[in-house]
Length: 383
Image 1 (tube, rainbow, N blue to C red):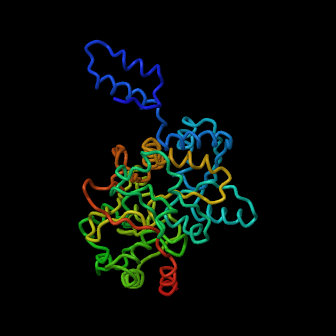
Image 2: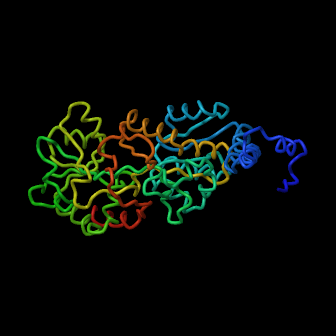
Image 3: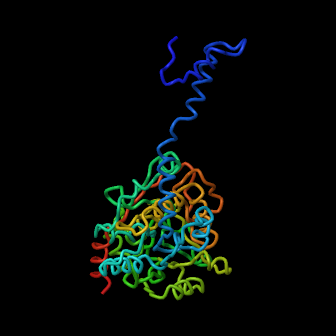
């Protein structure tokens, strides 16, 4: 047997002086196993260490978005792992945050690193080419391993499938709530049932023109079997009562002024107060449930970010098993907002029932939806 030239004379002598009773092949195998242990580490480990060292030099991170990314408990959990990064955050409604980012950039101020919100939130940034592809920032194997995510793939909200990563897989609410003393869930088996004569004049709904276009309205417009025809009839043939104040809408539903409401908010909190209200779950409707469409949170990497390495550090931690467990706990327990991570390797016991994916069920995953035709239609029928 000819030994490789790379072996030193010392190593050769060790092979020649093999222990008594140990077979030659085993000795060689053990030797080369030892050599293998001194080989270069996997590329991801080298890349990860390089990002950590570069992030230490940056020492700062700027997060823009809602509670799904700026909640103090999420930032605290990140800082526990990476205490050398000072995190600043700008928190608020997605529309306000995106308007702020655009205004800052027009003033040549590049302050934001990462943003997180519903899929339609970063749409403005995407259309204005203000985002970097996010996949190149993924380093940890537990993030890049598609088997760890719902459906065995990584999900994106943008049409190019590379800029807006969808980490939340919560079932989109039907948007329909009811007074438990005046209506029963079995009475509504399809969105079209809201047009039945018995509900005429008894349906309450948030005015879709009063704020950013709600996700359920977008989905109704773009959903096969519903679409513009349903929305037109829903808003014009039901003698519907529209409200703009969210608290007023939920109060009217809870006090029995109306048995049904579309887009009443904070029903979970009203239930905790003992009020007779509930949300109609998606599995009660023949149209079923969907994921995304504006109702699931996403994360995006803003281009020309001032702290690109700290941003990579946060993105990988946030999308890791640990990070998603923190996010899921905060949203369901602290914010009382049904939130189910796309990760399938984390516990789901804290996910509120009305947003939890059913075991073994398949759901349509929807990216961001174009609001312009919906706004045009509503402008025509809600004069």
